[in-house]
Image (cartoon, rainbow over all chains, first blue to last red; front, side, top):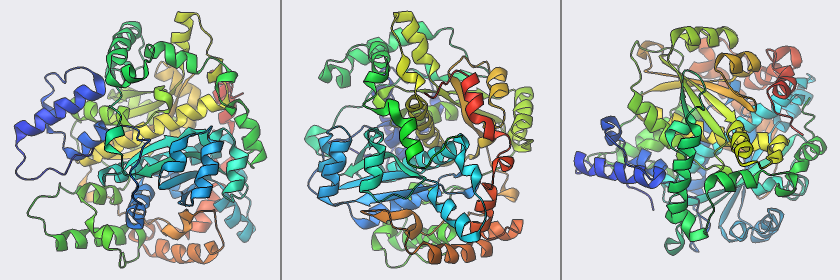
Length: 289
Length: 289
């Protein structure tokens, strides 16, 4: 699945061809005359080639690879160095089976040899404040939640890059927010901590490796100087055509992206219980003032 | 600043020594007998060596590097492929100067040749829903905001890795949340879109490259099977000593981490106006139901 590091024997022409192929898989369009991008190196092509992996070989993930990924995660930016996150490495099959249920019956959570619960963790500073006899009321605002949500997301993505660099595959599990209180209790979280998302990690089963999923054209997401959605309807129509024609969508008989995405957010009944996330967070010790 | 890709002439011993050095800079401790980690390759050592860069050479960032970073960003995981984010590339000096003010007077926002405003963008699906005559009420819940916050954070971190891989430096700017409405107006955002954070990008000024900032020991953030803060007090005391002794903290005369971090979250008066983030989001079209 993963590219290998560039070696001195790799020619410029080979690099350009590989980059063009990675670009085509991601966008469904030709790279065009972007000479600079031909110099994208193997690690960047690897990011371009990301796909969510939900089927794993029966092979454990070495603890050294986990520690390397956590080191990458801790090296990501963190607001004011507050480090408002933790991660719980779950290998126990019983716990993974229960988490799979809580996520809405996602079998890959039970199947993956390693499951990471990424914790938005305001509890550490609360404990420190209590020990010092100093208030930490700033954590009680929505801003405290946002600081933690960004911190843990940046960290997790560095870990994801590290895992993929080492030949592992992964998928994020937003279903941890379907039943946040039950997840918190199962994993022994203190108040002011919650699992923002999970991550299944394992060696991809080659026969079940999904195709790369095309994303929106850059023109739809990259704006210059000011936000401009003037050409958006045409851009998204073009994307709908690329998307429905892709291996990824054809394998699932997917409807056009713009219809599927809107349908996914049609109302609270489509949120798998997450329409009560605010109440759940209140119960878990996040006032969100 | 950045490592170069491993070449076939790099010996295993050199790799191990470089990894140990990167580890020591990040944690202030020896790597120890973690044989597997000696195999960390150059891209992973580069992530370990991240530091926030706030002083830049007078050299523009080529558009091809921006497009490469956006391709990396779009290749990050996105919940249900909803792609709930946009990014605005700001090169205009006047806009950057105004953003620097809005961020609380951060001169590097005005000095960096490229500023990226990372937008938590629920407006695209709202527009599509309106065009289709279909409701998108799911976006109005706190869950919609969380989906977008995670999406844009994962995307931005892939871009960060891509930029650093190409020799650029960067710093995230949470100060975009000090005055969210003014930032949204300046950049022409529609309702249901907000700049979650910014990112200054440029070539680092070598004379002003800050040292790597030590992070908490892994034992403080990495839990096994269940959350366990039993040994936390001792672990953080050890980190406080490493932190205050680090080049990063000594240059600023920083107090122990545990005291500085708690002080930072002491109450609403320390949040630079972000204690009203919830009200600001309501005004920007995020009901957060």
